[in-house]
Image (cartoon, rainbow, N blue to C red; front, side, top):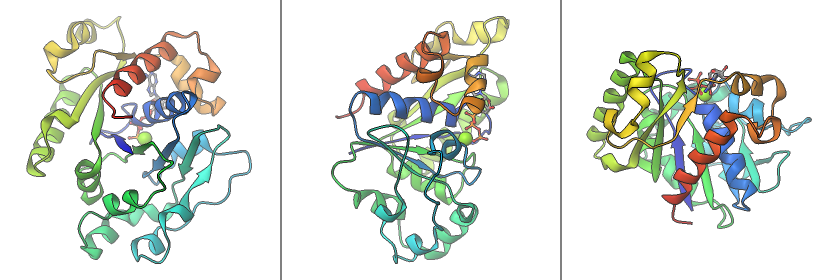
Length: 248
Ligand SMILES: Nc1ncnc2c1ncn2[C@@H]1O[C@H](COP(=O)(O)OP(=O)(O)OP(=O)(O)O)[C@@H](O)[C@H]1O
Ligand SMILES: [Mg+2]
């Protein structure tokens, strides 16, 4: 089983959009995929829920060891794609993880998943908290969407520093440019050659695209909503890059 995360300390940079689209593309290749919506805002849950979703569960029993992780898994409208939906109780995930103090629980829960699950995709809230620490300590790869701006590049330095403190190998952190507007000189300059700006960056650049914004209304992955769009092509490229580094 491979675990990947979409994370950034900055909000609104395209983490959830990437997580949902990559998860769908993985499942379309017949890879049994599970998205865990770790963000109590529940955006990934919104995108991937069935018309009449089975309700999300409180995280308390999971943390106390009273419910196995399997009890939290729900189906989605798509074959081979499952979801652990966000529950509002996940707002206190950090405090509860801190209080329980029993090592990396996230890692332990994921270890107990059935062998059928080939890829787990963690959609993370924007923070550098106990939960982020466990995510960074668990995932095989952490993908970090970066808007090409000074502030976003600073947030990248922050994440790198945080990961270094956790003794995470720098190679496991992979930034990629997101919401890129080629009409802007700064965006063009910083993303023309991604690895020149950020040595470990992926080559794929996700454009700023209204098609991605419209996913919120359509509640569908871009591949279903508008597969011919430039943005859908970019997510396919991103998936190919991610896939090539997974041990599947
Ligand atoms: N490449 C893009 N082009 C245009 N709009 C985008 C793009 N990526 C995301 N958006 C829009 O920006 C908003 C934030 O995107 P998204 O939820 O994916 O970001 P996030 O990093 O997960 O945010 P949060 O930190 O709140 O979880 C959404 O309205 C989404 O539709
Ligand atoms: Mg999000």
